[in-house]
Amino acid sequence: MKNIRLIFSPAWLVLLFITCLVVYLYGFSEWLFFVTKPSFMSGMTFWSQFKLFLLSAFGLCVFPVFGICVLALLDRILRQSILVVVGIVLPTVIISSLLLILVDNFTYTVVRFGIVSTERFLRALYGLSFIGLNVFVWHKLKSYVQVRSKKKHPIKKFQSLFFTTLLVFSLALSLHENLTMRVPAFSSGGDVSRAKNLPNIILLGSDGLDATHLSAYGYERDTTPYIESLSADALVAGNAFPNSGTTAGSVASILSGKLPLETRVIYPPDILRGKDSYQHLPGVLKRLGYYTVDLSVPYYGDALTLNMLDGFDVANQRSGSESPVTKISRALGGGDSAYFVDAMLQRISVRLMHIFFIKPMINPFEIVIEPTERGDEQNRFDELISTLEESNSPVFVHVHMLGTHGPRFEIHQPVFSAGQAQERDWMIDYYDDSILEFDHYVGELFEYLHKSGQLQNTLVVLYSDHGRQWTIHERVPLIFWFPGGEHAGVLHTSSQNIDISPTILDYLNVPVPEWMDGQSLLQENLESPNYIFSASVESSLIEISKDGIWSVQMERASPPFYQVGYVGLIVCDHWYELYLQPPRFVFGEVDEYTATCDLDMLPTNEQAIQILLAHLSQYGFDVSSFPDSIPIRQAQ
Image 1 (tube, one colour):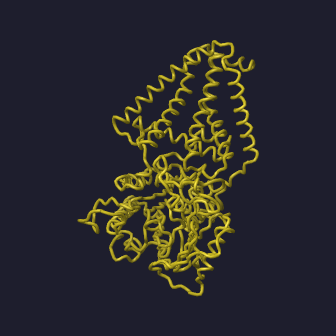
Image 2 (spheres, rainbow, N blue to C red):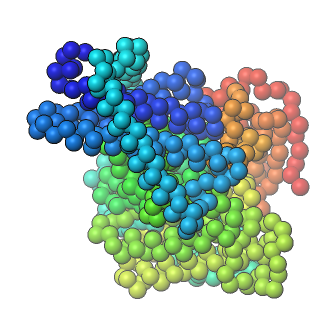
């Protein structure tokens, strides 16, 4: 303590102690919030969760403590006592932010009213209250520092002992993590120097599309006139299937080329971890020199929320580059610590930007559920066009549109639903109109590409994450428009969404990484995969969490299958689904499958069950307790 006092005056010692204390308190409060709700921590042991709190708080301490130290040294050199007053601002902002978060969590949980609900006057009132709170806290801290700095022992002995022990323990954990943690596989795979001239790449998806409702796939209604007119110059996968029945699981599998059971990303709050965080298509393209942008669904399909690292430069107007605070946290505590710190910073930053009218806060639940909240479809499309206009380098843009999501649809120009009222969920006329409106966006995109002269240097891929009502055994659209109409034709062999990334890389002449489970659809003599696997969530585990979003209640997700509700298998024109909770088996035929099938290659129901159990076992799920006999029925 005497050596420390040679550098720090009593006032600075008190301020240093307060700053560290409030940082740990802030970290503990947020940790308690995450650990008591469905979150990425839900599957961790209590020790892992607690260790995450210590490492994250330790990482958060670095910048404010560094700031206090710099000001203390300047004070000793310049003899400017006013610097202590300036230094008090740091813990003041932290305490005020903590109080704001606590109040907002409480009010939203109890009465469903919070910062996200405020507009105009109430929004401004929150901002003024936050400013007033900072002034109040600053005065209180100033008085406390002045009083304690005049004491013989400015920091009480038990406080000093407790906090020194906490910091030393946190430091020991950080050193242990750095010595034992595995370095993630940053390599995106393959020799990128072999790539051809780089076209712009647009990966354009619309939520919940059944191919059987697209006129481009033979539907009797003219739901996709633009897509159909463009299909002659495209590679059309006639029998494509999703690999997940949820947006999060599907987006993660599409961009990584990996099956959901491998990454364990099925449904929020699942995130990519370890090497999976770095092995993905946008990471490969970024190494090639692409400017990468994600315009998707906040929370449910957002690449940064999924912990997709070193991939997107911008994701839903958030920078894909880690902040200095997050980088320090990653260095001190590893990937989970960095993810937690980033989540904490996002939680406070979006609230502050909302109450100070910088950027409105988004409620992801309402965006997905309420069709009136999907007015940002045009904004998302406009941002795609702006990205194409403004970038000087080749761009990769992933766009996920929501107009076709359901169960209700916001229709601007009714055609099939004209004169009707949307009185119930999933009305087909409204669903078809939503597809028609998405088709208009596709037409606008190609019209822009043609007028801007970019059409011959742009690869456009159309996909859907899953079928209508989250089905995984219905065909989904998958269409590739290559520059110059290359590879045009209809592909009747079965394909899947995890083939998208390998196909793009193959077209660029970049070797497909070994870690991708899919295959390029540009191969000569392409054969249908023997099996197409998918996985989806257990629906009874999905609830609306305290902060108003759909999540898996992970405390109810128990081994051996956790949140996985069922796994699917497609073999030619037959589908099989093994439900795990409770065990049962359903099978049926794929609607309007366009290829002929060899009946001898189809497994029996019992064989299909064993294939699906082997698939689960391959990715670490314990199937030893699965019953030998389960109910089997054919879908109607």
